[in-house]
Length: 149
Image 1 (cartoon, rainbow, N blue to C red):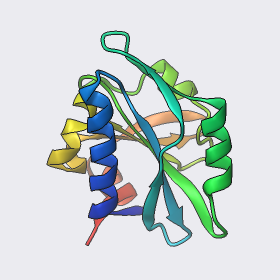
Image 2: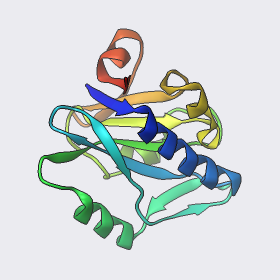
Image 3: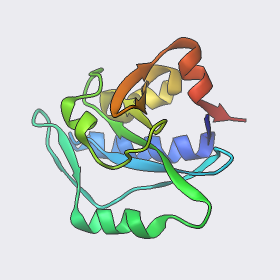
Image 4: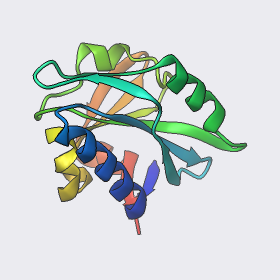
């Protein structure tokens, strides 16, 4: 279970919407402590194609940023990224090596980040299990991620 403060979701939403205003997807990683509190995001250097050629890729400089931003006791618990519409995880998303450990999460924010304005319930949540990303729904989703109060 990861718990994400509203302020972290707001910061993430603003970033994704800014990218979306340019017709581009965006990606960030949620940093959590061992208790599961995702208290900040890391937005790595990235390049993206302009809609309708939508894609996003973390640059080599961004990969170095990701390697340098974790502190003792922290993990990248989830990737959070936008899609232009309400598309599910793509094959590119599935193959992305940003996080690769079992139980890692991937959150897809539809409509270039705008769906996050309505809350996490309007986003798609996936969990990595045995090398496969599976969409979480209902209770499984509620047990995996929530907004901190």
